[in-house]
Length: 335
Image (cartoon, rainbow, N blue to C red; front, side, top):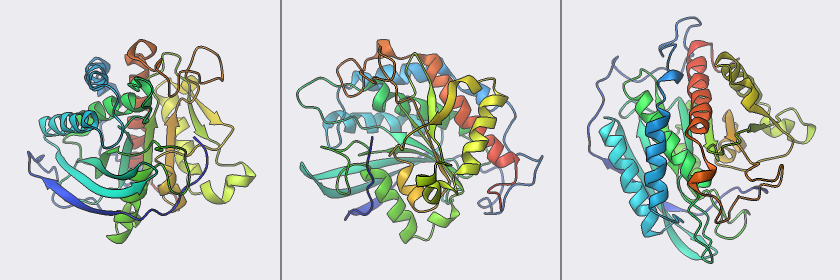
């Protein structure tokens, strides 16, 4: 993934899905102020509640839908499955639907949101994309790239159901460029969400964004773009404390060896938030293949279930959950 993209002309609407709502543990939404140190509202064993076996079953189901590019019937079936699982977890579900022009013509996209507390603006977003790259000349099922994040987020949603935290779990549509990443192509869903939140004066309420992408690789090595490199210091300085918390979260779980700094820029669904000075982090393994540093399974027919592991889904998701717990536990964001 390379390059930057900024504005898109989009039209859209929000569809509120009537479903089961969680019982509120406290009246009203959480305040924007930080949680008092040493009084986390989230349980200490939050990360351990992630069920890798159940997440793997979700991944098998998602891959079973076949290639899932934006606007396809297969992605619509995937979206229906996600909504079904959100409702089953007694979470509030929303669809954010919009249409925009692409190099392949107008496409209707759909972001899917699970809210931990009904009608509350998010303090935290945990997200990833559920579309796969449009590759018409091959059967690209995206078990890792698109599938792993979809499945992991479903289990993360189940873990967070009923927890006293104002969080959105988001499945972004249109992360993949139709042709090649540019100002006009790629990151459709996350760009649209940022614009919608900004228009509603809710973007300022978001204290952290955690993106998961390509986290299923059996040879898992998660990376985070280095925020201290001079050419990116201006763009990423507000995300540096969040990245430090991510490393601390991994160390707490005994998973520090699975995460390291990346030595080049990465454009992903965290980027539109980061460009708008929202602390954001991208947990991604972008070395996916059987040749070190070649990434030779990426966007090929070899991105299949046998290259993935339920344990990898667990590791990445547990780091994300522990990071969320730490953000509640410590005074966040830092002043």
